Length: 280
Ligand code: GRG
Image (cartoon, helix red, strand yellow):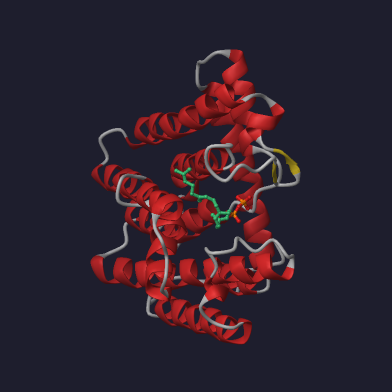
């Protein structure tokens, strides 16, 4: 069996290089580029791009071909964080233990850097996709997860809904956080050439992984006394039940992953287990 940390470290190093190379290569005003590069730096876990690359790697050896889609996805994720930190939204002065983009620069540039990360993501992904139908389907999956009925509706639910039951909260989590995690695996699988059955297993894996990720986020917030108040599963169930819920989703994720026959799922298995143990 391959060594996960070696594969992941290798992928991560190549990904970091590709991320800065792709942004640097986009022609734009120097100030905008500086803010974009600041926004994507700072030690993010890179969960979504690594999921995309690992999912692609289940079906194809040419992982470098998936790099522009992984870069695009991380840019979309970082745009959402930059905008979420703005005073009009979550009003956070810090992100990844550094000043958030509107603090390091100013609000106007933070809004524009977020916009540039989102539109730049699709410039990069579509330039790589060309006329390849699989790649175009993969980019469409990213667009719909980030878009109107995906992360954006999730964020609107977060800002405007009165959430009085756990099902409503889980729907909000699914749109706001889950859809982008699901799109990571879906886009990677589609671009890599997964057949319909394997793609369904991969999407079921990612759905449960996203649910486990969000519950773990609430548990970590609680432990670090940063509870986001109303928007926490701990408002509806006690800590022990939330932990069991997270483990149930982790096991279901792994069960679905195991249904993908003939693929080397060691990397995704390791990522799944490490998410349960994560401390940030
Ligand atoms: C502004 C359109 C728009 C959307 C914002 C994702 C999001 C929607 C807001 C972030 C709020 C938040 C803290 C959600 C909890 C889960 C989450 C997405 C955490 C951040 O993702 P990580 O842990 O971050 O992958 P890193 O820094 O590792 O990339």
